Image (tube, rainbow, N blue to C red; front, top):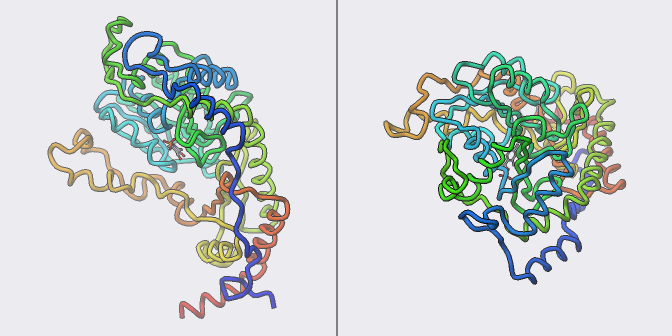
Length: 429
Ligand SMILES: Cc1ncc(COP(=O)(O)O)c(C=O)c1O
């Protein structure tokens, strides 16, 4: 009898899954030639040609701008740095509000805090899991300075609509595009529709440099401010005659020449890396599409999803067993998955315990009137608690043979779910 692995049977996938081979000879050769050149970084934190970085950095930024059809690209050492630089570049000041989604990686909502800004959470859409423009509209006040839209899991937020809202209110739209390089909305690349786009090149992403990030903008002034915050702005304000000194305190967010060399090689092959993962995700979607209670990720009209994470919605009432039991059974069969993604970020201790930080507590002392509590974003909470089942598309190298094993694993768990349900009832009794 074909017993489920979770009940002691033989798993469908009883071999280790191969990891995705993202780095090859091209990247190795590129790094070796930088090392041979003896110049591992071309940056100086003072005014002059070296303020902008070395040869490979400049080449990488130029190629990125060409590939994404954007005027300026500013490389940084992570997307987290890029988001902080973006908050500084727009002139965020203490008490300014920034509208953010709760379903994202924590760096998105931490970035305003570095300048004393206040994250204001707006709920996400049930279909695409990105920030909902209707919820954004409800959160705009006279203190709102920016919206950070996250193109989550590889799917564009409603970027044109959000840009229109931002322009109507004279505020900024920042795109956290960490997960969506070469995603598209209506023919435009994600990361290029807002005032600033921020990409991640950490090693979990479709294309990567180990650690790294890229900021993109069409605005000359924002570009200069991003470049200054990246590289010791305080030393540069005089030579560039900058009179608005707000946030002109710099960091060292500089990328190395070696990372830029890897990035150039990765960028050349970006379509191949993304297409491979996209085909895998689309196959997974077609496997579950016929199974009632499992809803594959939606793709909004005129959009390109690049599937950083493949995320289906689970309906326990239809399938007949709790989500966590289904997920565990899938894992036991060898299909690696996890539930929930990230707990809505307003539940982080930094928000929940801010009143206990004390009189000098940074920085929420400025916002005692803002409440962060469960119930604020019901869609995000339901998806997290009850519905999301995720698979890390970028992690594995999935051949067509493994993919058919995935299909067998999913069908097996689905087919035997009643057996699982009675076993679970017996266990819990
Ligand atoms: C949506 C989102 N924002 C920000 C980050 C932070 O990126 P980095 O690790 O490059 O700082 C990540 C990383 O996973 C992310 O997924």
